[in-house]
Length: 324
Image 1 (tube, rainbow, N blue to C red):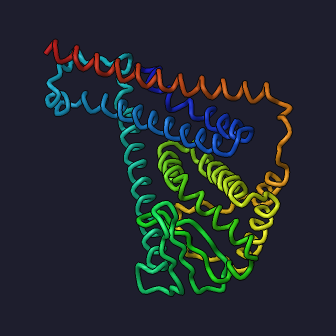
Image 2 (image 1 turned 90 degrees about the vertical axis):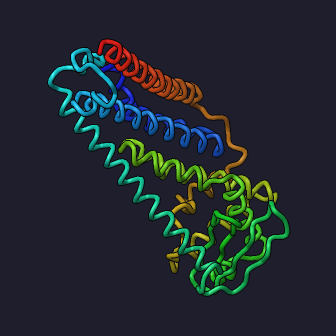
Image 3 (image 1 turned 180 degrees about the vertical axis):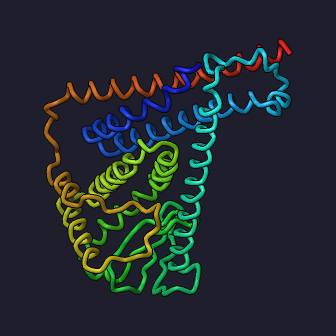
């Protein structure tokens, strides 16, 4: 079990850069889903490995062995049965506690931010100018806040809402506003906040997964850009709306945006991508294929190693219980 249980802790080191490199060569939707799936898979495998290491040490203690009805003399999970089990188990348990603390802090901040944003949009006493009722279940409500600072974002929840300030709406023309609202609707329709939340919690599981969160945020913005361009039927207009909205927001940054709202990302890069459509064939298709194969290999090895470590642990427990 020793090699198998350590593999999921080491494979995120090459897998995360591979995922980011591959995402840069894929369509925005595919790239975002690839990054989110990679983060979730590697984060879950990390948790499983830490739990197996901590559980191995726990069952070597008299109380743990008695609770699980084990025979300590026959409790040998793989090669982790010598004197090294104690520091390994303590480190794994400490890491699990750290992950739990980071996840709890992330959940607390997300809840507080969403509650603050909900209060500002009319679920509380903050400054609401107008709230447009949803014309149908598939169309999110539009909330307009009286604020000279320019900002607009998608606010998940029940009901989902698009929030825009008067400063942002004043900075755009009518067609540009339509493109901006289509962009924010795409965030809500695609449930991008759930993908961002998954990346946040995965980053709490393993430090190597932290760079996936900003990369995912960028590709979610590109995904929404493409949806907006398709809805308004004008890529140049969408690019202009993105650029003008970013310039207006940069003059007086707003502070009410929740953590689960996707950020604007590198706007010049997004504008170039919209204006470059249709994109030319990628000259390095072989490198993209190689990156995809390497990432698939890392994820497959992680899954197999986690399953093997879990099987070995279960088999060791059954053997120790049978020999009691």
